[in-house]
Image 1: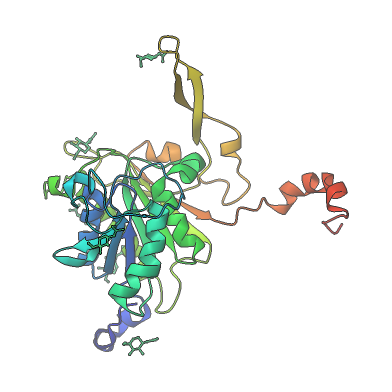
Image 2: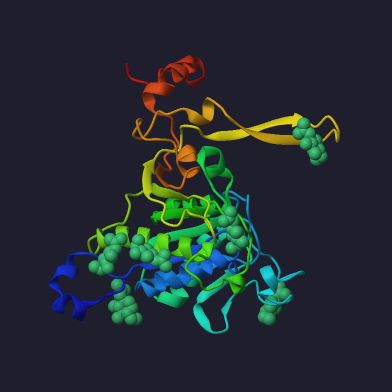
Length: 326
Ligand SMILES: *[C@@H]1O[C@H](CO)[C@@H](O)[C@H](O)[C@H]1NC(C)=O
Ligand SMILES: *[C@@H]1O[C@H](CO)[C@@H](O)[C@H](O)[C@H]1NC(C)=O
Ligand SMILES: *[C@@H]1O[C@H](CO)[C@@H](O)[C@H](O)[C@H]1NC(C)=O
Ligand SMILES: *[C@@H]1O[C@H](CO)[C@@H](O)[C@H](O)[C@H]1NC(C)=O
Ligand SMILES: *[C@@H]1O[C@H](CO)[C@@H](O)[C@H](O)[C@H]1NC(C)=O
Ligand SMILES: *[C@@H]1O[C@H](CO)[C@@H](O)[C@H](O)[C@H]1NC(C)=O
């Protein structure tokens, strides 16, 4: 936690809430992506102490896989030519010791950031919030939750007891931070500003010493599609749930090529709603309009007892006794 003792004395009204958070910022699109660098700048300008630690190369679709480097950087080097072949498997920007790459999967990068890099950069200060993204492309519904590296990097933090928020943006263009136009309508800058607003809303309402989110809880935020010339510039935040219109792959064989191909379908399993606030809209339809979906998730994967109990009773013969007191 960054301490502003003097400021608090002068402005007692601020003393009750956190002024600047210690934030670990990651993603799955690489440390050199436009979205993550714009967000690093946006959060830093708002007074947060941000340590960016993100994968060396594009790592989309890795989910929660933990793969650690065993050698230094191999060909073709860092994403967008950001790091030469042969460089160490982790390192920081020559001009900024708060901007790091690590040559592992997104979840591994969260662990390496929290366990190895943050202690080097922040000493004994701890991370208040892990922010991931904004991802290049939406991550909507439970299917993408498990599949996405941005989500994996986020639930990795939640597993360790650190509050985590995943941000994803509808615009899926994979681009280097060096292509940022610097204009307000650059999609990376729109996403960065919205992300800073979101983080500030959490920071402003969290008291010094209080957790930002309860243990085991994270947030999934999905921005709609925006960019230059697009009328969607200020999408409102809408409280949503993962299920409701959520999609999963349907595979078939292509008549011409003979190869498998996928389309998205709504399926009952992925849309089962036994947790959370049931009347909230699903995030998939909400983010399809010019709206930002905000879904809270928990990493307690046990099925609710009322749902699982009849099936658990069926296995009493295996367990040797009735596990559920009746
Ligand atoms: C990686 O690079 C560092 C620094 O250049 C060097 O000291 C180390 O021996 C290298 N490690 C491997 C496994 O090649
Ligand atoms: C953190 O480190 C600083 C400087 O090294 C030290 O003064 C302080 O007591 C430490 N705080 C805790 C909680 O360990
Ligand atoms: C950033 O968000 C704030 C708060 O909604 C808004 O007032 C401001 O215009 C936005 N800035 C840009 C550059 O979009
Ligand atoms: C957070 O607090 C700061 C300082 O009072 C204020 O400028 C900012 O608008 C607030 N942001 C949000 C999203 O509440
Ligand atoms: C997505 O972002 C790219 C890069 O900034 C931009 O060229 C493109 O117009 C955006 N797409 C849409 C649909 O806004
Ligand atoms: C089969 O694959 C071809 C080549 O990728 C594609 O153009 C075509 O649309 C596919 N057919 C169907 C029915 O999806």
